[in-house]
Picture 1 (cartoon, rainbow, N blue to C red):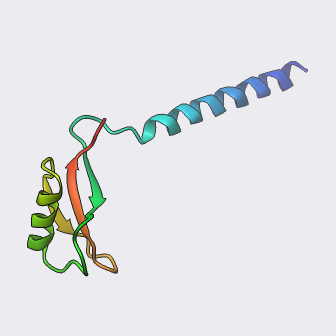
Picture 2: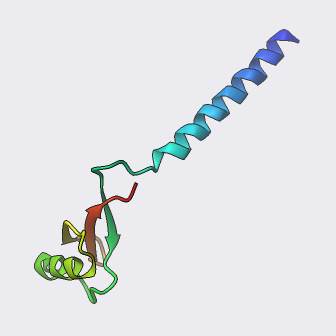
Length: 83
């Protein structure tokens, strides 16, 4: 019975550690750069200049905007993450 209790405790500890890792993994830290799709850019994103200009008009905190070149190419805005 003692071995079974140790296995249960070990499993419980492993689950708690895993939950802590999952809960903290997505937290943005100061200085991190996050992305979001532009709210106002329309059409396929072929030129980084138009995307950059659009992103900067959307949000004053935008660092830059750039096409992601996946299909369909979309305009992504890069800005500091909100902790």
